[in-house]
Structure formats: C-alpha cells, structure tokens
Length: 467
Ligand SMILES: *Cc1c(COP(=O)(O)O)cnc(C)c1O
Image 1 (tube, helix red, strand yellow):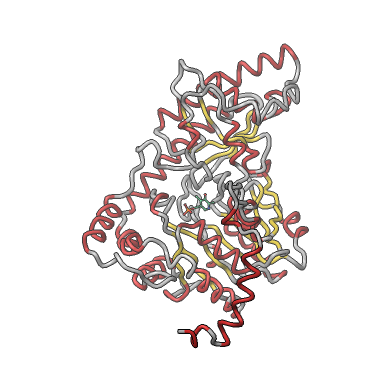
Image 2 (spheres, helix red, strand yellow):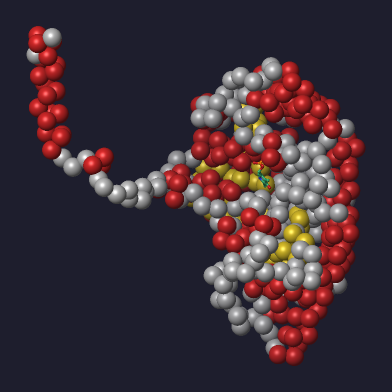
C-alpha cells in the first residue's frame, strides 16, 4: 500500500490537488446563481413570437373566436389524416419491427419509398439521395448547416417563412431577403435577388408553393430563378413542403425537374399534404448535379447522426403513407382550400382598400390593405380581435407590413362568417377614416407591450404558431 502511494504518478498529482483545494470552488458557494444560457440558444429566436404575443388581447365576448392565424390544418378536426396513414401507424406499432434504432439517415425502406415517389425522368434519384429528417424544419436545418459557415449568407424570400432566419442566425449565417413582388402576383423580384448575391452567398432558398402567399410559381418563372442560380453557380434549397397541394388550375413543378440543371437540395415532408404536422417526418433529396454537392451531402449524412434519425415508427409507416394514400384524400383538401380561397377573395376584394392576393396552393392567403384607411397593422389586427373575435396573423410576422395572412383550411361556413365580420369591421373603419381623415400612424406605437392582460381565453395563442 505504502509503495503504491509513492508511485511517481501519485506524487505528481498530489501537489496539484493541494493547490486546487485552496481555490474557491463552485460547489462551496452558498446560493444558486442563475446559470447563463449559451450564446447559441440566446440567438435562437423565432421572429414571430413577439407578434403572436401581441395578438393576446381580449376578444369580443359576444362572438365566438375564429382563429385564422394558426398554421396547423389539424386544429378544427375538419381535415383528419387519411385512414391509410392511421392504419399504417397502428400496424407498425403492433408489428414491433420499428422499436429499435435504425440508420441515422433513415430506414432503407423509408428512403426507398421517398425515392420511388419523387424520382423523375429529368431528375432521377435513388434511396442514396434521400436523408430522413424530423420534419421539413429539420431537413432545412441540415441543408443550411451543411452548406454555410459563420459569416456566409443565404438568400431567403420576403415575405417568407420565419424559420429560415431562426435556423441561420445562431450559426452565424446571415439571411439576405429577396423581395416577392406582392403587387404583381407574389413572384420573385429577380433583379433584387441578383443584386443581393455576393462572394459570401452560399445558396438560395426558394419556397414554392409559398407560405405565406399561397402563390404557385409557373414553370417559366422557376426557370428564370434557375438561370440566375446557374449564372452565379449557387445551389438551391427548395422548400417544397406544399408540393402539389395546388388548385384552380395551377401546376406544381419540382425545381429539380426543370432546366437549366442546378444542384438542388429539396426539403419536404408529410406535415402539410398528409395533414400530420405532429408526426414530425421530413426528408432532403439531394440532386447532386456536376458533383457539386458531393461534400455537402456527406455533411448532411454526418449531421443526421446528431439525432440518430427521426421517429422510427413514422419511418416504418412512411412507405404505405406515400404509396397508398388515395388521390381522393388530396382532392378533398384541394376542394376545401379552393372553396375557402374563392370565398375570401370574392368577399374581401369588394371592400375598398383591401387587396387580397389570389392564391393557388399551400394553405394560406395574404390580404393587403391601404394603411391610409386602416392604419398600422398590429393595431388593426388587435382591434379586429376586440371587435369581431377574428384572429389573423399580421404580415410583419413575415416582414410584410400592410398585409395580413389567413389560413384556408377551415370549414367554408366558418371562413364565410369570418369574412362577413372582417367586412363589417372594415366598413366601420372606412366610415371613420372618411369622417376623421386617414388613420395612418395615429396610434402607431400602441402595440407590442399593451397586450396580454385580461384575456381569460388565451389558449388560442398558446399554440406554437410558427407556421
Ligand atoms: C410548415 C412548413 C415547414 C415545416 O414543416 P415541418 O415538417 O412541420 O417541420 C417548412 N416550410 C414551410 C414553408 C412551411 O410552411
């Protein structure tokens, strides 16, 4: 024993240990201080949180609230998932073949199912080009983090899905917003987009069909974007989560199927078209043209190890969900969306100073308004809740002041009722502004702090409305 304690290694350690004991140690402090959060977590912010919180004002107790702000098609229960999907999940749970770990990039059968569903003569893919993710959000994160370093930038649409910035910012990746021409059908302002490109630009995110506008880009327009990407040798991250969820004659063209051929990372998932956002399953498809994405693809494979793949049960159900969901399921969703879009368009385009932008895809539409008549948008949306119990999302959530977004997934009667209330509200405003002059800027800064009190029914706003 004595010999052992005099081994050189112990001798070397002993004095070090002694000096260490003299220093004050965290464990000896009497009180708990607040432990600081990391910079990364503090820089992870959802820019629309504050705006959603600003809607937390009491609604009119005489009127049932209608929550057209929630980007979740499951909230009212009128659009349930397909029986195929539910049955597939049930069988997978009972079958016990997907209780364990699978490959981080996803189960082979599930990757094959994605490849089989989305391969195209112009853009052939195999299971090797597919990496599964925990929702399209995670697919986007892998694509972004695999392609850009701190100090570099990615181009994103404006108005656009706020998550892109949430994903980039904590990684030190800058987002540069290119404009959608909201007064001209919501298409990309190509001149503006090109003006933003610099030597730190790593990719262009294109979201088609678009959230929040519901606009579906034509083949020709997508090809114009591709020509720019080709010219500047920039890959495209295509957020195609709404895919062929289009209506009223619009056709969806996956970017990878068009020319000129550009390296494309397509991000997608089952959340929206299959009406199961809570199931958290998405994927990236890497269209590695000219070998340009070989390294980035390896990078995404590495990143997939962080969560060891999405929920295995949903992976197990994916082949049947993709193969067996009947067309009638999608047709029904499209009918609901189309009926809602047309009802809103017809009703609100009659109101002076309102300019609805006609959508043909996704699940939303944007209504522009004249701020000379209706004033500042957060205040306007708050008053709409106070007076009519209709909740819409102010466009500032998407960097688009003087617009608001509403969802088109509700039963038609509910949407029609909402439109009647919005119309009456606007007509009252119109009278006021005629009598007292423009409302513009009069109460502009009575916004984001005055809310949150006295609302016994805030549950409508608790839901994470990130979408
Ligand atoms: C809803 C949405 C997503 C996120 O999809 P998840 O699969 O739920 O993560 C991504 N992009 C856009 C544009 C969306 O609207």
